[in-house]
Length: 419
Image 1: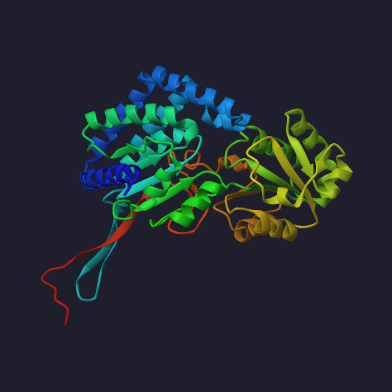
Image 2: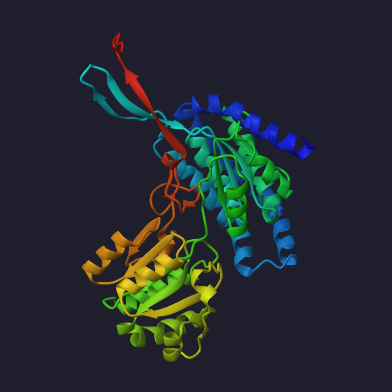
């Protein structure tokens, strides 16, 4: 075993040792820890911003895109938003220990289920240092120890945040090792982490295709994938076109470097000539590059030609693929072929079309007459999210507190024996 492998095993073992007392902590202690963690972020923002500046400088020298630098950047406003996320998690109901479904069997036994922590959760993520705070808080409130491994581009930011959170949590009575950050940027640390099936119960990767693929292929631990966000906006023949234009602009421009930004827009042929010129002019004025199908280019000649690879691409940038379709069926078929199961939205005034879209589109969130940007734990009332699962087991969509727990059967008897 190499020195690095020994270091990672030691971190995982410490997290496992912390998981049992953490699972037994009262809601009061966990909430006190979250309050102190939020205060630590705000009071320590100078150190966090200084650390973040080092990451930003390195990112610029490495040629990171503007969208990636935006995901990486921290300022007092974003740090306060991180702290507010922790305060919101504090206010959420504690799922641990909840008992549901108690029923009396014919033999008199009472059988039900109790919600319990998963144990130790490993999070492997890229770019966004706010993930460090969000995931630490969600895991703490749900009674799980967490091992964090952020990307090399945010190493200094993540260290500063994790150190502030860890000190505050420990002072509130949280066991040492409950919040652990892998301190190295060596990629072999990820491989070593994925071999710790004795100590880690679940791995959640958040990032691009290469990261997701690497984790899925190399993990001995169960994985919940937070895959790429190839999100679609479909403008139906019965759409309010002014509404559709406003939603399309928000879904693409408001924050293009995040997973719930729209990457492809489908427009019904019956409204394409009325909708596309104004909508695409507005998007282009905001710096969006339009990559259109031949029918789109015939209507709006400033579009570049879309390649086949553009339809399933997560651009994470001011780029939008646009296609004219002849029917709702064609839109649904396109989404099924090219989507990643993340978020899809239909803009329509036709209730039947909306109903079909909701039933037949198979994604973690399906939306009617609103931006894809709403697929977010905070917007759905979960508090900060640990990510958006694009698979179906055991969680799908934004993962909040309940998605970080499991259920065990509990049985109450009175001297029962089985004959």
